[in-house]
Image (cartoon, rainbow, N blue to C red):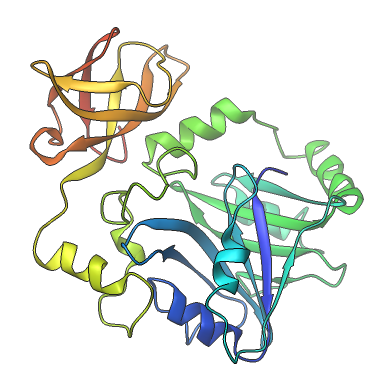
Length: 297
């Protein structure tokens, strides 16, 4: 998964800094654990959604994307004042691979027992590989990041045994059917976390962070005008295709994929009045779509 972006943030005050910059409470995150959080701008719009992995006392690994190279490091750098922090992005010789499925526990006890530290959700193995284990898009997932040659050896070892490689289509089907938003599709600075189905990543009781006032006010005063919804589409359509109701524009399609049964599933932003499961809307130039609950059955 080379297209995922990664950033190591290090320094004695790094966790406090990340806590003050993002929506979730991460100040007390223990070593070997991780949390999802969002960086937002002053308008409460999404800058980036990240998996924050507490590697050790002095550093954490941030995983985000996939997509084009992010501006997150330079954006964070604008808010560093007295803190002594370092940002280390992955280089051209580094990669990341991802394993998903209900048998991940068996895989850890068997083929991965030498590269994962028992009892920790994330960390660095003796061989120097960073790893993070969590539940993503409804299934158990473990990611490894490190030197490409080292990961190729691990990959070859596992696909020769219990692991079946899957392509981008299967990965997007899992993501879309569980309503997981993606950068450059559902996640961008046109939307806030509430709209993007990411309310679980917002701690309404923590201290100040960039965009907090706007994000809290949107929830407190019910000012959320549109929401990310699941869609049963008439066909595969391009990202950005408009959605209408009785000739009026009510939203747009962000992502779509076909499942093995030939059904087209998608995610899109729809005005609240039409975001109820069962609503029938029109995909411009394509036909009728059906709003469906997330995760999709």
